[in-house]
Amino acid sequence: MALNFTAIDFETANSSAASACSVGLVKVQGGIVVDRVAWFIRPPAGFDHFSERNTRIHGIRAPDVADAKFWREQLADLVAFADNDFLVAHNAGFDMGVISAACRASLVDIPDFRYLCSLQVARKTYNLDSYRLPVAAMAAGFEDFAHHDALADSEACAAIMVHAANRHGAESIEELARITGSRLGAIGQLSLVPSFVGNRG
Image: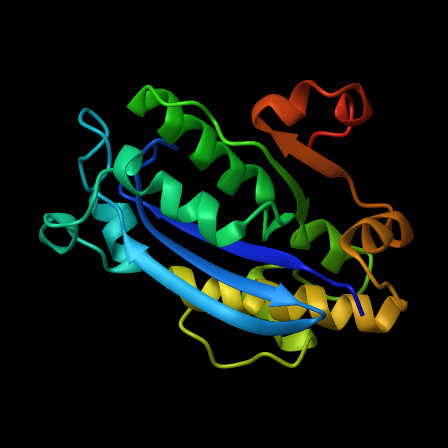
């Protein structure tokens, strides 16, 4: 199976998409998890307030990220880990919005990535009362994880995609998107490529 992708999840300090404070990444090659990594992010100045609501959700506070690298300092590590993979996220519009907004707030170029939303795939794969990440992950056989921990959420997202691909007999992200009728999206300069116009998730 040539099912290769990087699952990604962000937590934010507040309601601004630019306020990324944590990221989790899980690399899948040939349908198997081969690497995982997570780190705190110091949000850009002006976007670094930690709201009580967000902290209540993910438990991250300002002191936790005080010694972390700023977005502009660690973006290269994120790009290097993904290494031109498709990115996959649950409700991918949010996570791709975080990348774009944090880059704009940090005055750096938005990296080029293609992506697929595991929420869309789950809706075309399972018959569930809810397609929230914990519910969809349970349908994929991935249970009892720490929801709103960025790495755990990325692992759950990866499990959904691998399970869905096996269920549909898809051997690539492109094939899985086609079979499930899910939209492939793009950010960065790739969002301007004609083949992706109208297909942004």
